[in-house]
Image (cartoon, rainbow, N blue to C red):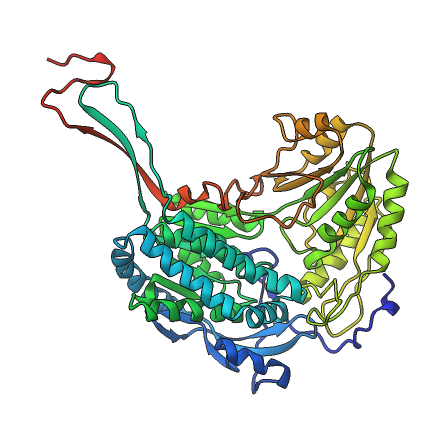
Length: 542
């Protein structure tokens, strides 16, 4: 894309951003603005409880905040949307104490009754779907269909969790001893901490909170510091459902804030499980902190996802898939396709068709109909894109299209395709933006080797018509990722399967399948209903 093809307004002075190592992914502290009132285009926010100035801590049913005052910023123009008073350490402690007390009530409620509450949460979200989706697109920067789709994903998770609430089954195990029975019992952990990222500010909450709640846990949520408004709007809807059912509001406790709150959750011995979504670097810090107190971590970290196009692939289907996987959400999904591996016999055809498809990508306001590529989330993200392109060029990368920022008041960049060697160091890193590396290979075995050669192991996909190749790909000597697809993109996972990856992606699994087991405590119970005391392994002790 050439900059002249884009109808983005001229640039204004940039906002000031301050990176912090404890902010998930490429988070930055939010710029502080003052004397703010709602612009007309933001008036819809009042329909979901957002005001020009908002308290950012939901503590025991009350909204408060005694921390810093920050502003949520529209990444399409870097102008403020609304102010938020963040949580302080005092707010956190007050909220945690109430949450612990609420957990004593919530865990005693029968699981199907807990499922009914989650069903009502889904209905509350469904009633405000369009407003929430619009806010999400406004604040995060993803296009409106993706924003609405993300909220729908939380609704889907609520529906999934309702059914799950009647299926939290344990096993009955045959005992080798007469008049004995062995069985498994699954009980709640108590409180689950959820730290979410800016790129999916409410979907990741849904993956975790819906399951954690039906499993009998209370939830403490720290939303991304650059998307506080969606944190507040989601929490208000959950709080209303709890109030309507005369349940303790502290069952769901949330905080807007940065590193201080994230560190408090990681260190808190009252939280047996911490789910963290963000970069591998920060995730490792969280894991080490939680492990020091023998807590459990559920990590969903960086991805460096490859899509392989074999010589027998449906090229048109593959090109459509690559476009969505590489350009969707401006390349800021953890499942974004970052490496395109193309068989040498179809390489030129694939690249030519992909370049033609990229010419059709409309860049602009994510709320406008027809836009396919919105802005990067922050100014720092845009700066990282520029730095990344310089590194790519220094390591022999050839820019086939894009490669530049778009001079505007927003954080817009060109969707970029780079021809580069698989051995280049930069290919093994996750550049969080719409940058696609195109790599050539000769054999299936070589493609698998390239796919598996990076530190991350989240998602992967292959396009082929060969049953032999398909089953090798999903088998023990195929992809080493947690998500292994065939003839679909690397992104756009359904909620029914477990979501997560291997290696530097963290090993966690969220959403569907049997992910619920991570949110519960398993006990193996042996019951003697006889009058004798036979010992296992035939031991005779006196």
